[in-house]
Image 1: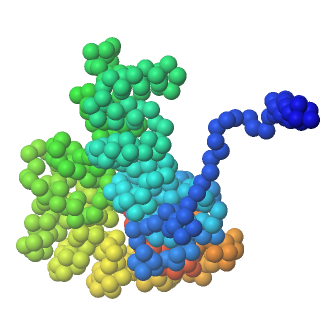
Image 2: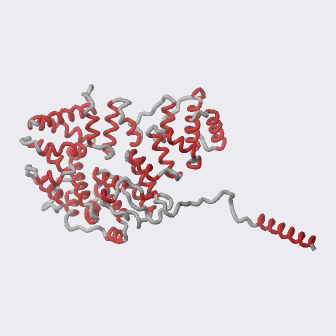
Image 3: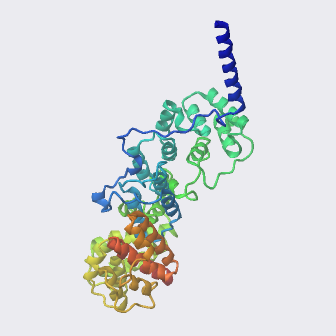
Length: 486
């Protein structure tokens, strides 16, 4: 009986084995990807540097939107008006719940990408300090920022403690070598080349990094290097100039280690993008007397002369230097930072000549205190009347045909209403998405589509962003008028 039972059991086991082999239930032995989180853990996607009490935006800003739609909108926005870049930065740094369907941190990584591309490197890193980098997707951004800023040691230490954070073999080789294990780094490099994981410029850079004697021929620098590639070129004694590189690399020249000229160029690039405070730009302009002339140096000299004249307060000298510095700042795309710095003190100077008084009035409209300064203007002209109405949030009595976008802007501050589709989205709780779409409409309007510009202004006003609507409209009209005069 015992023998019979054993035979039956053996037959069953054999049959089960055959069935398992004949009808597999999985295509791979790789464990499935499973996302886990403690039930009471805060969502890293909600992290922000600016709380609702500062931004005036609700925590539900993004909650009802599709994360894929938000990512597309954020990536596609091309904002040429400084005020809209400022508003966008507020949105990206706002503390708010992520979209309800965002389980993969898509919205957070989209925010990080926009901040980095705009040169707001320190803000992006501070945001990651809040979220932590236990997720490989966040670690990748954090590692790039660390390498970009020359802080590779914390990156390598974190990767050493938790190798599962990154499958980037180049980073692993770099960190292994930085840790002193050059033999193991070389073995990893050969393995990566054999497996096809490393090839081309990437493999060549790492080979030269590990053994410069193996270098053969010239290695052409990439147009858009990764932060790791940038640091590898630096380690090889062939540092890449930052001026032709994407904007995030400009932050590396702010220290002045590469010379004052490079420092000024970097500061101007970042100031144009709204990623450098005007006071810091002024501080860099004022470091020393320019030792050369032409181009950038003429701008520095003109600004320094204007600042000295403003301190003395003599109207004739202030007017003369203002007329000289204004076109310099306009050609560099820096009229808004200039106005933020000097519009208020200019408003106290009495007796300016008519040409200088007109420039001082334009500076007033381009400053954050536009409404207050506009109310005290003594210059009387149709242009000033039009701009003053916008500064108050009123529809101008008669649009000026010689001012760019005048008619569309006037309609936006009249009785125009947001497009029905945006009104519907707003009713669905998709406030953040509606703001992004309004900014996209504004960009289209700035390119010449008057109806879109009117809709954008009406929408921004409808969602409570009155100051944004006014300042963006004033900047668009005045900056485009300035470009037309040149």
